[in-house]
Every structure is written in C-alpha cells, then in structure tokens.
Image (cartoon, one colour):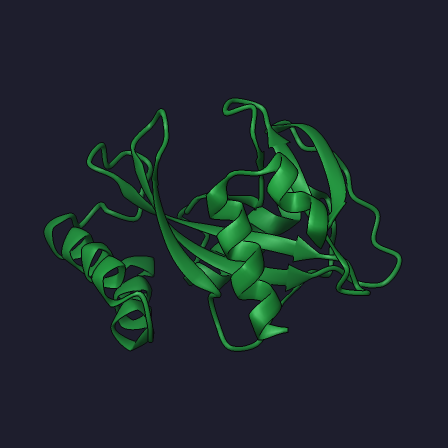
Length: 171
C-alpha cells in the first residue's frame, strides 16, 4: 500500500474534526502527489509532540527557518510507509532521541497551516521519550528545550497549544 493510500484510509476512519478531515481527503483526491513537498498546492505532513517519560514536559524545537518553537515534524519521504512512521521518523530525527513511542490510539489531531513552501495538512501525533533520553539538536533546529506544560503557551503558537491540550486529554 502506498503512503497516499495509507493517508486516505486513515482519514476516512478518523473521528473528529470532520470539516478539516474532508479538506485533507479532497486534497488527496485531486492531488495524486499530495503527500510530497513537490505538490505546490499543499501537502500532507506528519509531526510528533515529544513528551518526557514523567509526562510533565514537552520537547520543542526552535525551527531554523520559521524561528518558532514547534513540535517535531515535517515532510513525508518515500521511505515512510505510513503516517505514523513518518511522524516517528521526524520526531526521532529532529529530537535526536531514539526509542520514541507513539501514544496509542493514532494521531491526536489535524492542523492545517501555511508555511513558506505551501499549505501543510499536518497529521499530529504525540510520542513519549524513553527514560534517560537525551535530546540532540538537528540541522533543522536552532535549539531544543523541554518546557513544562504550563509554559508552552508563553513560547509557542496556538497550533502547538491545541496539540498539547489534545495530547493531555489523551494521557
């Protein structure tokens, strides 16, 4: 099964955010290349909010290009067989933490936002870091920092705050 097919199957079964979910499905129905960065009309992306093992803090990256504190995530790649694997790959690459575990139950939420390259139709997961995890800054980041839940709204945009709220509801 292709990543495109996996995304369509996931979105058809996804419960909640019906209007936004339909935007994603319509996009994929009209754009066979809608999973890839090359699709100038927008593309599906995958991200992961990394949570510490005690479930009291999240790891955010100061994105090099956007200069904003965000969750780990980005473009799907041909090696990604599923959206979950794309989110886990992105989370691992950008955090430097091996052994991340996605929260059960699939993605936490969907979020559509405009970036310099195109619209991102982001499928947002949450991942728990293993005990003793040590983060490492990637080439895509200016900084990585653990933030207590109460401080996220002070540094991040509303999209990250909504992702944190949805993640905490699932924990």
